[in-house]
Image (cartoon, rainbow, N blue to C red; front, side, top):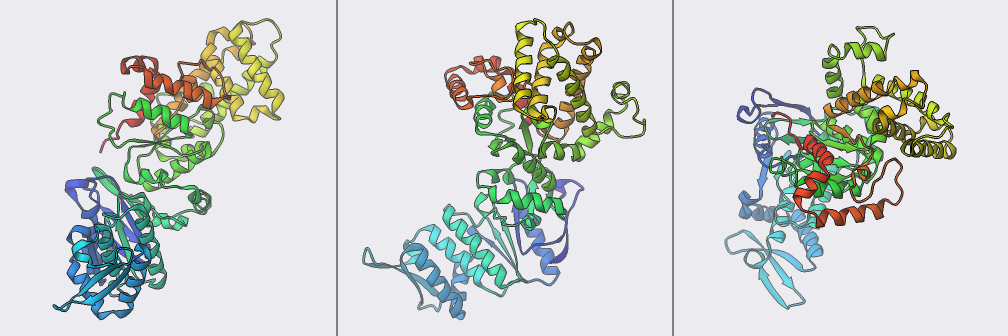
Length: 511
């Protein structure tokens, strides 16, 4: 449905206004405490009423219980439906009877205990709360229902039940609009990509954001992603300070180090979320970008060379803008990298990564041609490359192969000069500068690449040099035990590089 709204809250957002025209049947207003969710909804209610809609704004602590119960007197269909639903939910016989004052009072029969009592006098908050919500929902009079934190006094199963009932009512009454202000991940029910259009994300000190439309590519991406989008993942809707990582070892290690950062108190509300795979990082990055949330990602080195995350970061407007600002500063370096590129043609992140891949491929070919005796550290690198070469076809296209090469070049540096052709050796500083530039460009989009490879390369109990890593579980449990036994002072020294990356990821953007 199309209703033009424009909300100004200068004391929260400055001069910027919230604008939205296209509304879903079910809309969610989410965000951290103090971000203005209720204030936004109140202003929207006024504008919806001005547009001719009948609006009901329901706040748990301010809902007129007597008024809601009284409405049951005039609607036998709703009354009987609620009696059936509540009796089934609670395993008790629940009925409504007219009180002496004319109102309808819910009575509960606990057959197991052989007692009957007035709900208003003796029953739990949860039952009374779901009763009020259902009365409001099943009533067909309002064009728009706004529920402010309906999760209060409802355990997770009741929350899931209520959002399910909301969807049923929406299908039956397709002209009714429902808005839910919530802090609960159980209300983030997004069965289809189009449901994302109904999500409004509020932020501290800046205007709320939302998705206006989805491209065909976005729909395809989210249709595959949403079935794997669990309650744990949905934390990011309620805070701008969420950090996404690939796996549980990353999540555990970084969560353990988070409290050691200098910005610990400033980053309260930050969560480290394990998304369950490298490709999922790209999806979360895309969702955050579309919704306007300040999501952060800490990713392994090989994510630069393949996958959805690379594509999303290359297209991110923050990356593009950062590189545009760097053009003059990096002009001399760019001329070395791209001698045939016109001065007016923009240098993109994809340009930089492709050029890095070319350097790495040439370097790898040179290393694989070495047959003389070499120092132990270089021998280990060559052995790793040969193993990958023997195991995979078209190894030059393998993200792990490129990551290993970059690890080796950044780690060995000048030690390589005596064993590769002079022309190839001369690219070592180019590769180092180029990779540093790429890391800075991804950081502009709040994507922080682990320069040493992956989380295991920062372990102190076991020294791991190159990807891929075998026996990750064993290595992790050894490292986790070390984390638990060591003092904060020791950990700050031992994991200095990781903590510095966390500091960058936790830093808040200016409001």
